[in-house]
Length: 130
Image (cartoon, rainbow, N blue to C red; front, side, top):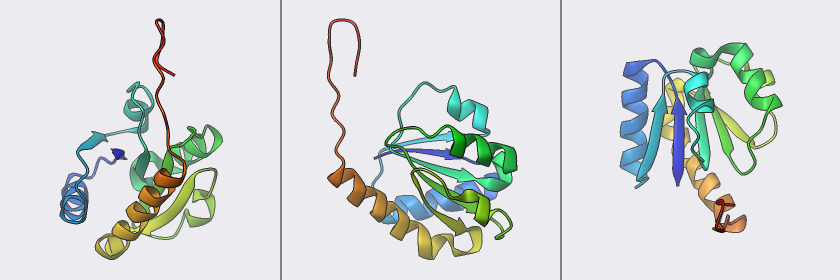
């Protein structure tokens, strides 16, 4: 699984990475401090964990209005203020930061199951990767 995390809160990010690595053996995790870094990275990710406290309401609306095909999204936040705005195409949920240890495993397992159902194949031609 190729995972992207957008979060600029170092302490929470460290905890999140520890929880993910404890429960999952995800070899490919990219961390971005802001939404622009993620959007301009030029890499494909199977899943995006986006900290709403980092991206804000504007970033949340941007992600939901420009969904990436086959990239599943999980929003993370301190409180439920943006929960209603957080649902859109490919959004698999909203996890409160104080529940991260209990909930993130369930969300990542759901992504893994969906990836098995919707497998993605890369085809190489002489000019491009499709």
